[in-house]
Image (cartoon, rainbow, N blue to C red):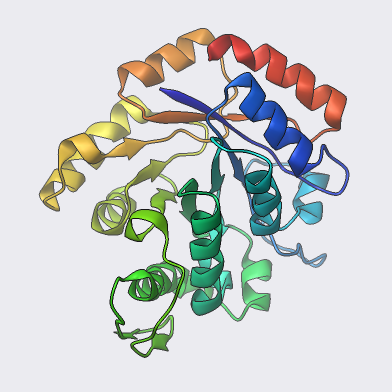
Length: 276
């Protein structure tokens, strides 16, 4: 089971280059970064974890720029998003960004996708909240058309369309690994089985109960049971928890780092090194 990390990188935290080098030197498998373009001040959407929204949400670095820096100073470190809010992106432009990052990093990119929780942020991007899930998957299908080996047209229902086009570079293997985040449930698991490589549950709670349901949806969609990837995300680790994930067959676990300066982050990495 691979041990990766995630962090809210901001203008006040450790820098991407320094963190990426330290992760690779210590033997961590990857670095995943979250995304919020902005946080509207007039916000009625409650913070999902309860209480006040932490300061770091409004100060996030762009994950693709930061991951590009991380890719340039490492050779083995996996690079991913946790999560990209695809409904807030132009899918043609994002397909190019992803293909370029994956190409330049030698196929190290994982596209973690999510639907988002902040209605006001999504509204500023012109997103109708009730349709954001369908929009996300429509745009993913459009990106896959641009990544196809031959020019492929895609006529979307809500997320746009693209003519058959030459679009290079291509991601290694035809597409990056795609993990879908979100709360457990039949609708989400059907989406995972339909168009993703696995599930990225935040925190990893309740996996014992959820995993059989996901596996049933996966096999019902004709997918090979051995290919399902389960990647608990933003986990605060302890030995028992990680042993449990390994027993469940998790491919990877992503540990949460503090949104802090260099000294505190490096101390945390040293503490997490016991799990490698």
